[in-house]
Image (cartoon, rainbow, N blue to C red; front, side):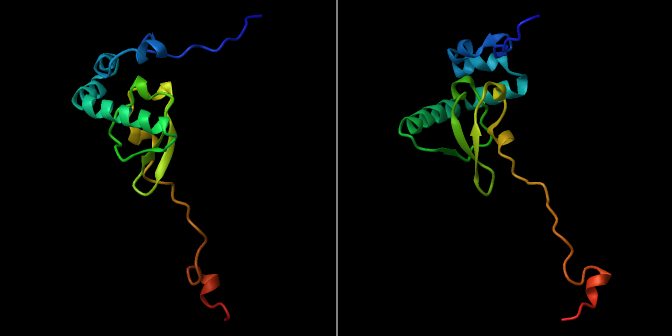
Length: 131
């Protein structure tokens, strides 16, 4: 009987350790064109965010951000972030599968509507209810 082993995480043929050694702009070569253009335009913002997040993590503080358009790069893997969804900060643990995606994809801005029961007068049975 074959032994079941956990498959190591790879992204475009590179392991996570190899990706973490890359610069932000070098990592851009491994993502799709839309994300590559965004990374190359925002690489300074991404690097500033990583530096700020690492100092906050070292001080055991929460890393909060309103920047929903930043692309997730390998240096962010393992971080615990709080991303603003328009009302509150949604906690997000960054994993390897999130590489190349934006922060905003993991902090939903809309929730599924949960309708309550019908109010008084909304149905014929409750229209002439004795008071």
